[in-house]
Amino acid sequence: MKATGVGMREMGRVAIDFYTELKAVYIDSPGASVNPTFTEAVGTLSGPLVPETVRASSLYNKDLASVSPERRSWRTYNYAALWISMSVNIPTYMLASGMIAGGMNWKQALFTVFLGNVLVLIPMLLNAHAGAQYGIPFPVFARASFGVLGANVPRFCAPS
Image (cartoon, rainbow, N blue to C red):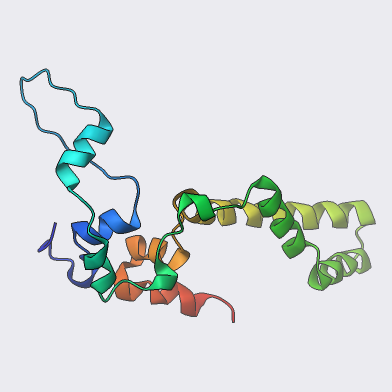
């Protein structure tokens, strides 16, 4: 896995095993009728996980560690409540009142604001899926796209 030529984006098998639950496996069995299960293949190819090695890495931080499934307590209600609380606020009221002042009736303004919030919700859900499903925070998720150092770019692009 190392020496692929991508520099700082190389993490190694131990870090990938630690930060992910799903592993891609390639099994080469030409002409053989052997079909191991996914669990058997992962267990034989990845070997035992050594948490001490991962914790000793400069890429590890307690705040960036994945959350265990037992500690993931958010359900649909929690996500819906968060979305509603982010949608119903003073700037939303000001936006709707500006639309009414601009000539829309209250139904059109309400629908426009609702549609805008739904359009924002879709990429938010897609972005948050990895964190909710696998318990990894966004900075770790961003390393897959931007690399270790490049994962700082989304942080500086976000509004303060």
